[in-house]
Amino acid sequence: MRFRSLVLALLLMTTATTALAAQSAAVETAAQKDARMAWWRDARFGMFIHWGLYAVPAGTWKGERVEGLGEWIMNEAQIPRDEYAQLARRFNPTQFDADDWVRIAKDAGMKYIIITSKHHDGFANFDSKVSSYDIVDATPYHRDAIKALASAAHRAGLRFGVYYSIMDWHHPDAQGPNYPNYNSRTATNPNFSRYVETYMKPQLRELITQYPEIDVLWFDGEWIPDWSDEQGKSLYAWLRGMRPSLIINNRVGHSRQGMAGMSANKDAPGDFGTPEQRVPPQGLPGVDWETCMTLNDTWGFQSFDDGWKDTRTLVRLLVDAASKGGNFLLNVGPTAQGVIPPQSVSRLREMGDWMRANGEAVYGTTASPYGLPAWGRYTAKTSAGRVYAHVFDWPKDRRLTLTGVKAKPRAVYLLADRKPLVVEQAADGWTVQLPVVPPSAISSVVVLETGN
Ligand code: FHN
Image (cartoon, rainbow, N blue to C red; front, side, top):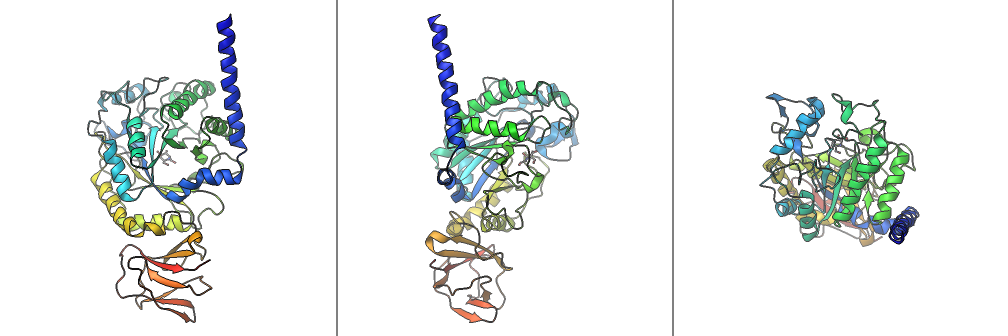
């Protein structure tokens, strides 16, 4: 009897504390939110990692190429649940080296890493007690990839987060029964709340409690008819109740407007918007947002996808996002052996070369105060009284018109050599006399000391 009342008291206490913490998280002041989001806003550039069983077939099923995204092969090839689950026996990433992945990200100039802990296919890259469909129990590898990467990231001073799909093509109480169209936009599951309460939330609690390094939760697969903004709000409060410092994307809710990435209604849950495969033309003024982008045309590894973007395009996309006040989350899709494709590594290394010389004009900056110039972009560091002009197209006549700049800058110089440049008043505004050769073929940064 005494033992039962003790357990009851403990249970009541934990729910009370979680509820209390949820309340306090919910009533966060603007200053508290700014403090919580500060590292994320300063970071500007992160690595997205899509990795899981889909890397085994790598886009080919029974000898046939399967069009579409690599990580969607279970749905695109209409693979029965149990047949797809057999892939776990062939998932043995012996070449997976967490420190190597972290080094590739850090050398690229990335400040945080977000990896898929569970994608739509339901397979978990971590040791889950509520499921045996995970990397420790179901594969010959038997080791926890999330644990390895979380500690490697923090050892290297990078922040860490996990992607988690609300949609689950494996679970019988979720979208498992939708076979062959797992991604049905109409089918609902009468037992979905059981999936949420006895599987999804316990897994999220495992992630939050087993991996203290997790700073970000990146939800996806929220478009299913069984999910709603209301459920998203309570999940958000529950998670922040467990870890108030967490940052959670807007896909915890249900009303994301597709690839544009923002939620339809203002009080939808989540801390930042998630435009996908695009940088919004005018950014998303007034909110935190992060563009996620593939390096080629797929998120999960696909052996034949060679649609690789070039480094210049990638750096300019990063600068474009920063110039509009947004982050850039660039994806890699490692192989089933645990290797990040060389085409990704070389582009990330080249981005790193540019970031080592110009990172000051990206990290900790805010959106352009002067709009979008034709020749490139602006980023600002108001606290330092500085604006950075990112010159994509070096003017043939070496005269750079500082579009939008009203007051004459106190000083102007190239970030590369900090040598003063001449600024003249011209009919079309303040004009900077540039040297013949641009310091970078990708984007050359001219610093404007605005002093305000
Ligand atoms: O369906 C997923 C897709 O596989 C990938 O994970 C992207 C990444 O943001 N999100 C979904 C499509 O919007």
